[in-house]
Image (cartoon, rainbow, N blue to C red; front, side, top):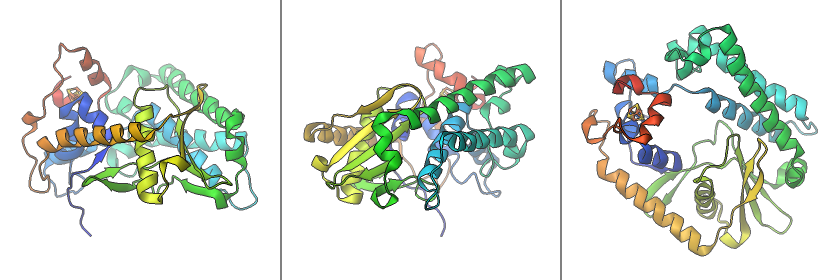
Amino acid sequence: MALTHEFAWSASRASNFAECRRRHYYSYYGGWLGWDSRAEPARREIYQLGKLKRMPMVAGSAVHESLSDYFHAKPGHVADVKETTDRALSKLRESFRESQSGKGRQSPSRFTHLAEHYYHEDSVKDRAAVASYGKHYVERIERCVQGFFALRELAWVREASPNDYVFVENSQNAFGSFMLRGTKVFGTPDFALRDGDGNVHLYDWKTGRPTEDDAFQLHVYAIFAREEWGVPLERFSGYDVYLDGGGVVRCEITAESLVAAENRIQASADAMRELHFNADRGMGDAEIFPLIPLDSPAARACARCNFRELCGR
Ligand code: SF4
């Protein structure tokens, strides 16, 4: 079945939109259909730039996937810290090799292509730079996996029976969605577990530092749990797990804060909808999605943006 372009909201789309309208255009409009070799070159170029990844993202995915593997282990097998770390490091190294070898450039939808390589960034300019940059992420992964195994609050999670798992993210279920006030909302949690009293505990693995949107993201998951699993708020708890030394933080979610989160989603979706058009019919007008002004402090984001060559940044 052919994919059709449709309007949808997610927390990451919202933050992309808030940071830079032009990046939102490139990510969800300009590059649409660019995976098709018959698409016009401009679409294909934007699509390929949109597929670039950065090492923090690749390291974070490696940790998420290895934790997913931990929960999906064969019956009777419990992976330890070494096995879980080795899996994550192997995913990181494989991704880096795919990018370095040029495979990612040839097929960015199948293989990793790092923006660091594409833009010839200093972090990969020679062997010494690569060694130091790679070590940084190897150590981050080691600390994150150790954090997962060391946190006392996660002991019951690590030891839980798979029968009690409510949700474990994997490559098949990574694009869950639900409808909220007429808007399709994408949002897939990392892991959720039911306790003996029927309460659902949802954990969001974080491999980076806390951000001001973390609590909002857990509110989105509380709505997801209500809409998709039928879990009422009084039976739901959400936690941010800062694996790299920050601990487990339970999010205070009340009926009022949940309504505030729904209103925030609606306001954000309404703003995005004002610029929305059907990208199946054409590439639209990029100019109605302005660039970040060069003299704005927010233009710092351009230095790590996949699309910076299109903006001349
Ligand atoms: S380079 Fe800057 S202005 Fe251009 S899309 Fe990226 S963040 Fe926006």
